[in-house]
Length: 113
Image (cartoon, rainbow, N blue to C red):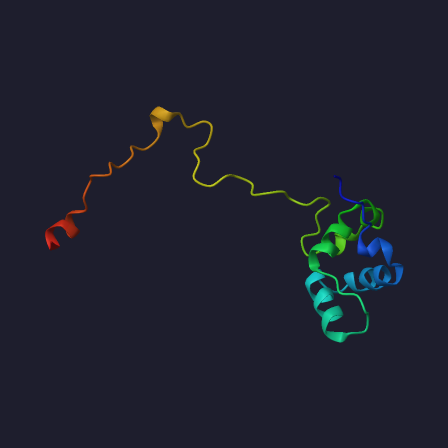
């Protein structure tokens, strides 16, 4: 069973969208979401991820809203740039540092026993 397609909150409600776009020029998405929640001016609550998704979507891209985000990137980065704990491709297995054996003891601890 497929999920029903639901348009994003900022696409469905033009008043909310206009308020977010207006405030995005001077505030961060975190500040906008916090103020909408605390002020109670607007009956809608919106999370920061919704604002980021809208800014990087087709609708936000046409308005170039990414320029007003803290990073100012055209596209979002996905994942980390390099994986942790792996060797570069240039480093061959034979060149990798030797692994310590499980039975290798630390002298300072052995002498204390």
